[in-house]
Image 1 (spheres, helix red, strand yellow):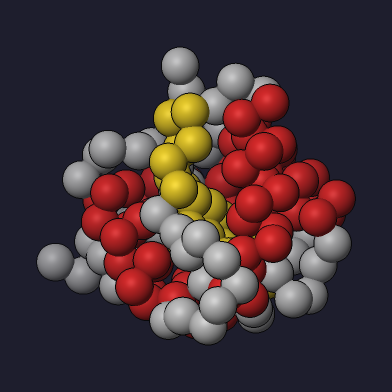
Image 2: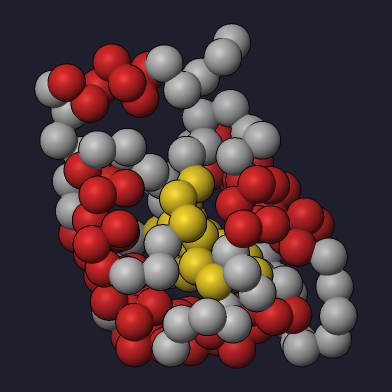
Length: 144
């Protein structure tokens, strides 16, 4: 079974819940790092947990959601080996996989509809990394 991690703060909770159901319906084993309600919480708490699991190889890919997508993308990108990409439309999701080998999709829960998020998730999960000239660029992302 395909495994994926997901995390959100309170502003991304509704979208996260939608995506958990959607991914489960496609046969994914979804590990939900929270949050588990719309009660105010801090996105770094869930973002760090998700990123650590991706960095350790427990999950090949992850999805994170906060209000703007910016804060949680900053958090996941603090972890070596994690390449989080803020995406708000399908073309960005395609490019983040093809050119950047992104392994965490970061979504802005307050600025996109669930249907658009679903499209971005589908593309993020289906699009392979092109490698080639992009490989050396991805290798230069890691500092140490």
